[in-house]
Structures are given as structure tokens and as C-alpha cells.
Image (cartoon, rainbow, N blue to C red; front, side, top):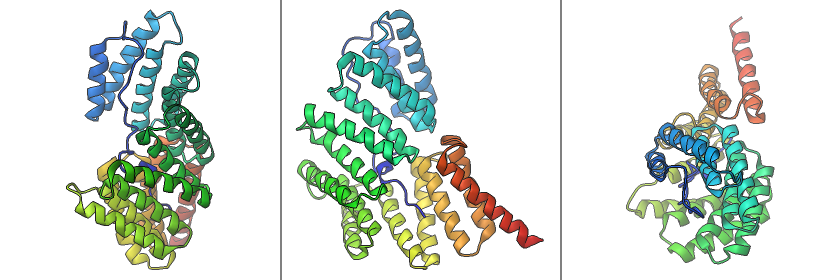
Length: 343
């Protein structure tokens, strides 16, 4: 059973384009179109933003002799963010890799914009659950940030947290704990104790402790996270879903499947509302419900839920992705078991 990706929790369900700081004006690509595309993106109108940025890229490529134009890199970066949000990760990776190459050629390796490009690529590897590659690109980004932005806690905190999460995924618990401590200390310095970002760090630390079998310590962290969320002026369903998912996994492991199912279904409802239907996080939530149905002996319900998870994975990750293949093999196994029971 899998929990939702914590890196895709608060403010991470979308790649989220940061303020693009171009090193020179958009001489050929229309500044008006570029800004309009950004506005569309912020409103969630991804196709509209993609069309305008695509137009800007076409004009910039045609008119600018310099193949390594940094403006082109930033347009490719924006297109990569859109493709990533749409779940088209192969297209997103192509755009991010092109943007990275141009940025390195133009600004050099040790530049904050180069670090951002490494982070973009790490996000795509994360979405594809390629933890080794994701860790590699996060470390590249962090090394640059520590050299050129050593006092920028806003940048460093996000990378600390992301790296801690991926290290947990890879079973490197001691190192994961070290980076979570760095992230928590930075967030406390930036925001104070009662900030929702601090709550997310407590939740992530709780997940790490839970993974190590330290359930009592994990519950303390989860309780801290929920206490901050409850006292916040606005509810944060993503944080609640993260805590529910961890508690459901534990209940499932203890054999309390009915209670686990209730929590997994609540988590699925939140994820569908927050991320939409066609998103990797929603695919994981469907799969959790499917696995719990199966363990409860509800084979038809399990197949129906797993089919929804599989549909999302095939669309986003493709048929040749290892995780898609695993879910597909499980789906065939369950279908054969259902057919055998009816003979």
C-alpha cells in the first residue's frame, strides 16, 4: 500500500511557475502574450497558456539567431510546467532538459536559474517514481543553491524537504532525518511555530517515523500538524489527507481493514477535489482503495478501483513505466481470479 507523495502536498500539486526573471527583454516574443499566458496558467487554464507560450517560442526561435537565447529557455521552462501539470511528463522532460542546456550554456552551471532547472527535472523524476534520478538532480540543485544562495532560506527549505522525502523513499532514513531537521529549523526561523508549512514538516517527519515503525513518535508529529491546521484561518485538506493516508496505512498493516478503508476513501475524496481526476496522486489514492477492497475479499470493487488507477497511470506515465506495468499485472491477476471464481 502506498501513501500520497508528500512532495506533492501543500503548494506542490502543480509545478507552480515562479516569477520569471528574464535577463533581457522579450524582443520578439510578445510581452503581452507572455503575461497573458502566465495569467491563464495561474487561473488553471493550461491549454490557453500552452498555446500562447507555444506561439512565443515559435516567434523567439524564428527571430533570434542565438540558439542559446535565455528567453527561449524561460519559455521552454514555462511550457514544461504546463505539460507537467497536465500529466504529460515525457513532453515536460523534453522542455525542461532543453531549458537546462540553454541555461547552462548561457549563464553557467553555478547560477540560481540553473538550480531551478535541476529542480524542475527532479520533479518529473519524482512524478515517475524514479527515486534515484530524482535524488541525483535534487543534490545538483542543492549544491548550487548552497554556493550561490546560502542565505536564501525560502529556496533551501524546499530543497531540504524534497530531498528528505526522496531519501525516505530510498530507505536512507538517517540522512532523511538530517534533512528534515534542516527543513524544520529553516521553516521555524522563517514562519514561526504556527505556520501551515511547519505543519507539513511535522507531517513529513511523522511519515518518516511511521516508516521506521516508530508509531507513537509519529502520532506526536501528526497531532502537532493537525493542531496547527485546525488553528489556521483556512482549512488545508491536503495536509489532512497526508495524515489520513499515513494512519490508514498503519491500520491496514495491523489488519484493521474496515477503519483503513474509511480513511483511504476520505483521502481519495480530498485528492480528487484538490488534484483532479487525472493526476498521479489520485492514481495512488484509487490504488490504495483497490488494495483494501481486495484484502477485504471484495474482488469486483477492487478491480473497479484499480481500473481507475491504471487508466490515470497509463495516460500520465505510459504503458512501459515500471509502476504502470506492476499495476497492470495486478489488474490481470485479479481479473483472472474473478473469472476463475465464476466458472
